[in-house]
Each structure stands twice: as C-alpha cells, then as structure tokens.
Length: 376
Image (cartoon, rainbow, N blue to C red; front, side, top):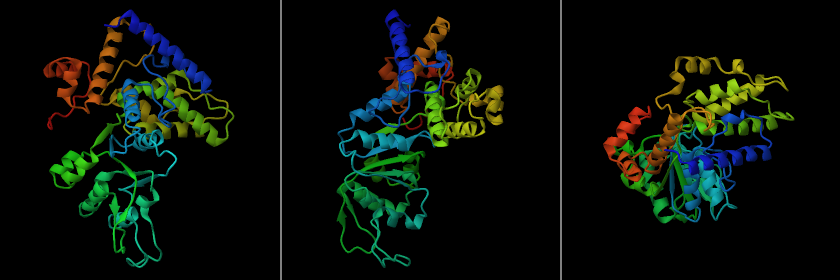
C-alpha cells in the first residue's frame, strides 16, 4: 500500500522532473503524462534518457562499475539502445578520454571478421595491399564494443577468448602476438546460453564474457520513458532539420505512442518521430491523424500492447483510483526485482520476500509476461 511518505516522494519527483524539462527547453508535453516515479537521466550516463525504475537501476549499475575494467555483456532486444549503454559505460569509466570503437559482428562477412577485429599485415591474403591495425588496436587504451557478439564464427572464438584472457592478439601475417590494453564491452540480442547448449558458442568464452551482465529492458516494459524520449528525439530531429523549435505534440498523439508496444523498441520510436517531423509543417502540431496507420490499427485492436501490458498508462498519482496506484506500485516492484535478478524467478521472489509460486501467480494476475524458467 502506498504510504503518505511514498505519495509525497512521488509528488516531489514529479516537480523535479517538470523542472528538468523546462530547464532543458524541451517541447511542451501534457503535464499529467509526466511520470511521477522517475527522474530525467543523470548527466553521469550521457545519452541515456529514462524515467522508469528499471532504467534507473541500470544507470545505478553503470555507476557502480565505473572504476572496473572487467568485461561487460549487455543483453536486450534489437533496438533497445545497447550501444548507448556501452557508450555510457565508457564515458563513466577512467578511460573516457580514450577511443570508443564499435564493431558489429553481424554486419561483416564471416571470412573477414577476424582480420577486421585483429588486423593484418600487407600481403597476408589476396587484397591486403596495406597494413590494417584492426578495431582492437584502434581502441587501444579505451573500449572496444563488439555488437552481436553471438554471431562470431565458432572457429574464431578461441582467438577472442585468448584476447580476453591475456590481452593478446595476432594479426594475420604477423609472426608474434601483440599485447593490446583495451576494455571489451559486448552485446547480443540472442540467447547465448541456448547457443552454448547447441554448441554454436564456446562455453568458456561465454563465461569469460559474462563477468558483468547488464540487461536493457524492451520499451514496452518501460513506457514511463516514452514522454522523455519523445521530447528528446523531437528536439534532436528539429535541430538536425534546422527548425527554430521542435513541433509540439498533441495529448492524443502522445497517448497513442505510450499505448503502443514498440516491437522495434527505441529505434522504431525514433524512426516514427523522424517521419512525423518530416511531414509536419513548420509551426504545426503533431496530431493523432499523422501517426502511422499500422500503429493506430494495432492500438485499436489491442494487439499493439504486446504480451506485457506493463504499468497503468496514466501517470498522475492523484488522478487514478487507489487500487490502480497499488497495482502500479506492485508492477514496478516486480519489474525491478526481475531486472535485478536478470529474469531469474527464484531470486526475484527471494528479494521480494515471497514464495516463488506466489510471485508466479501475481505476475499472471497482473498480466505481465512470465520469465522463461527452463534454465533455473
């Protein structure tokens, strides 16, 4: 049950968030849509825009590992912003002034991944007309971000393991290994545990990558973030288009954006807003009728909500009944426990002080998505 202290805290957070929006000169949003239980992203996590409890937890974990040089594995669906999290980790660390070098393992041809990561000498293979340092050496002293690390070919994985364990690489055509001082942050949207069980990914490499694991939740499970993300992207897109001010968005349009499940996550939301800014006449308001037809159609049928309905969609704690405020609080606490336990139902139940079976029942009753328990 929400106490008077909790209600007061929510009110203070609401005032703080509204003030931060005004200071940032962000576009006007309906005040009752601003989440009461979150705050704008801390400046210590540049690039991360959030208001939800689960993302605040992620921001806290980034700060706790800021002095560490350990390997980090970031998991989450495509489009949730895993590279932004990687950049925030780099920016919070002691080597923030050094290079941050991203490399997408799924974008490079399989036969070229090794040479692009570790480099090569001139003449090492047909077409190698000049020396190439590779991204590992390009990131020397800083951070190498390997996106979609699960797509690295099995035959190359022992070399990546040696790089992680000893800091050594051997460029193609080089007679001896070279030492490289670089921190590795990896990301994947695939199930690496499943890949290990199917012998598509080395178990020893998985455990070496999985030292510190951060999970980025999908946007449908943190709809509190959507108003802030909308404001941020509208400002960014307006600046890029040379507009004096970002276009305002109507209450009805914002409501539709909050209700939608966003299967493409933050990337899809940004693309939708880019389309809206492009077609909206300067000085006009983004209205509901400008939104994508598919988005509106799914919202009308209810399919746009996806499997996880998430918390109550109205964000003024004084405008909804007490029973709904209690449900919102319970959903946030369960989401927090699941995120902190990396979706492990047994550990989440223990942190909430309840039996595992009782937590399962509450998740079903609240209409949330039940975690996969096959690996527990």
